Length: 410
Image 1 (cartoon, rainbow, N blue to C red):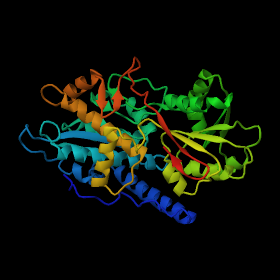
Image 2 (spheres, rainbow, N blue to C red):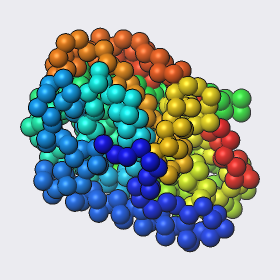
Image 3 (cartoon, helix red, strand yellow):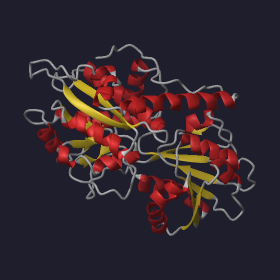
């Protein structure tokens, strides 16, 4: 187990000096490069994966002989590809903080949790390597907090042979069919988009623009976005970047819809808003849960365009008990600022722990899966989990906003 003392950041922190835009961008690139190296190391095979895990995973191979205090294995799949590593990094910080706190309080019936992070590049082949290592580890009884969305979607179709529960994945895809082994607790894109657009409905919203970072992204999400817009009786215009998002922003015309749904991450959004900087028409950009507004401001995003970002968790400054616990734990264990994504990782671990406590008899993959399949209602300190007929529990959506003066409003 790790020491309960405060730890250094997992990766280099983004500069907080807003006045030095180039310094921020270089720092961000450095963090992405470091994360990519870690991800590539993990892809070398099971031996390399084991070598790059957190300190909590070191005892994974050598559990105590006594069954009464043998560690319970919890595996977490993470996509550290360039497009997803910033999301995965924050989510993992929250999960690690939660599991360390849980272990400091006795784990599950006195048995510690061994939290194993399996890092991938988001591809089917790297997922296969990770799942093979889980299959061969009898100590691992549950997957918790698979991140990000593409990896969670791939895992949804790949874990059947393992007969293992996948708890609280970062599954943003609205169209995914949920099987009896997967237990999503966060609102998908459809709920997030609907929430944000209803807030803007006072503007008499009739048109919506959807912005994609590439043609490939548009092809991947076109049908989902078209279905959501059609369900809200909105005329949809779609745009994708050919030579860059900044250039795309500069090409917006007076005929472009006043509300733009942005379908990419934080660095891409910062670039796009810089392209919108000199637009004369007032526009609103709606971003989804993968975007961190505080980081976007630090990266030099243009401030004359209001940006609204949804998140399927409470605001990080909320007074809810689960959020207060998250802030205290993060402050105690990690030198990291609170973010919506790390709060989601924290909640994912807390949900998994709550179900593990209710397992009847021996804690095995099959008994843990049976406990999750009861899909019992949960109240995690104000974050309520109630599954619907589609086997989802994801109606909780809040939002934050970057105002034209660059201030983030929760």
